[in-house]
Image 1 (cartoon, helix red, strand yellow):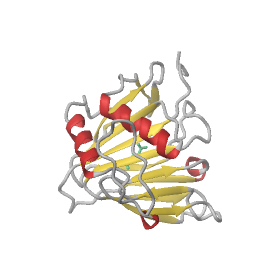
Image 2 (cartoon, rainbow, N blue to C red):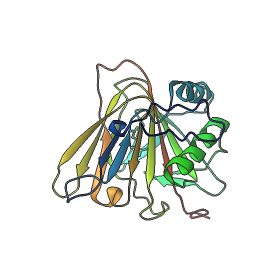
Image 3 (cartoon, rainbow, N blue to C red):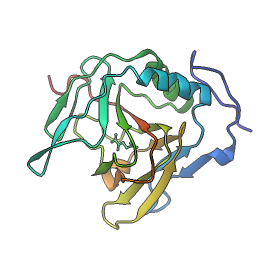
Length: 219
Ligand SMILES: O=C(O)CCC(=O)C(=O)O
């Protein structure tokens, strides 16, 4: 059994992580997405601490431009990060809010456990299976090229689908509460990802995508 290295002051240590929980799908050939899936990355207690905090986040439905038309996003969101780590997508400029306490501990845990160094995070809340996210890559110019993006899930289990840009090969990850999916270098260049609608899902899901942004890119 692999010992679980918990982050500083972040709930109880738990040592229930086995090799079977770590699903590697690293690039062996062109049609294998460069990701690492770690089931049960967060203990139930760590998940509860985060959920309690998320309830106080200023999550909002924002208006974005898609093919020249304004749309309200089918989910709510908030963006946190270090000063100067603003984010720009679909003609929307988002200024980073200061790190909440538990979220910043999760950032440290990603660094300690998996050497993933990030300075910002997009939080998305999907109220139920009607909320979703369309096909895209996280390839905005302010994201440090080739840096890993870490995605942590809380709440309802939802399908996270990735699709190769050329071959259109699809791979599905049914991400459950507490799971971590690390998207490595090459993922955003060669693959897109989406969170499709799943109308039978009635519970909310919250997702955190931790990123490494070039500070002051837009200043
Ligand atoms: O909620 C998810 O798992 C997807 C989030 C996502 O695609 C993103 O933040 O770019």
